[in-house]
Image (cartoon, rainbow, N blue to C red; front, side, top):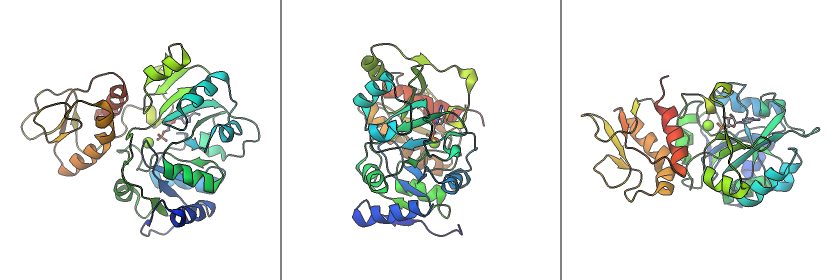
Amino acid sequence: MTPKDIDDLRPDPAGIDKAVAYLRAGDLVAFPTETVYGLGADATNDDAVATIFSAKGRPSFNPLIVHVANIDAARALAKWNDAADTLAQAFWPGPLTLVLPLVPGHGLSPQVTGGLDTIAIRAPAHPAARSLLSAFKLPIAAPSANPSGRISPTQADHVKEGLNGKIAAVLDDGPCPVGLESTIIDAVNLTLLRPGGVNVEQIEAVLGRPTAQRQTQDITAPGQLASHYAPNVKMRLNVETPNPGEAFLGFGLMDCDINLSAKGDLTEAASQLFEALHLLDKEGRTIAVAPIPEVGLGIAMNDRLRRAAAPR
Ligand code: AMP
Ligand code: MG
């Protein structure tokens, strides 16, 4: 595709129709989900899926999450089991991704799963994503709509800053309500692959048993690599008192440059995290981040912050 400005679409019937036309033509459309903006392509179209990897600069071994409208659509692609059913009944549509064996005859481009015989799949809750999925009717492969390794987009402007000239359109429906990527669970081994928008405590309560932790040595993808979600500037974590010249990202009542949640609310803080990193990254100062409690959504926030601060 020759570089051109991104077509700015609204999530109304005309915008959804246009987004569907782009997807059918094999073009990429960024769309809002409750987690972050996704970079969507027709998951059954090899060329379209290849364009996701080239637009993001994403390594081809890093598999994509397939987005579907509901459990029935998921069952056409993934070998369903009781745990998947329990989790999907409890948390779909919503920010939970299940990894399951692929079914034969799934029809997906093999690049979607990076050649694996498993699929990562979820039904998003965001109304615009749901409208798009029900109008398009086919599964949509969608990683976060940002250059690989960088901060995830929680607003349409973040998408345009990162991918202008590389994608056809963005469906703009304002900021993403959750603001952190989905939780990923291997639903065969009940292993937590990535903490995210659904708390692991809630998942374990619904399953009635603890989940296993991913073994750190079997790193297979940048979403699980040490450096990811990274701003251009340096970051320091668990800072009580920032050094002179640092930008201070706060949590709870304190004197700081941006406060993720003055009242110490982790849900509010999670929704603000990537926007705050985008804003502070433009200032060029090192970002010092106040301690975030390691509970609930704080677990996923600290996971993203550790990767954002990791040596690159
Ligand atoms: P992103 O789309 O950037 O949020 O990343 C999606 C994440 O899903 C990647 O980091 C992968 O590790 C994970 N993922 C996707 N497919 C699979 C799979 N079949 N098995 C394990 N992890 C997967
Ligand atoms: Mg991503």
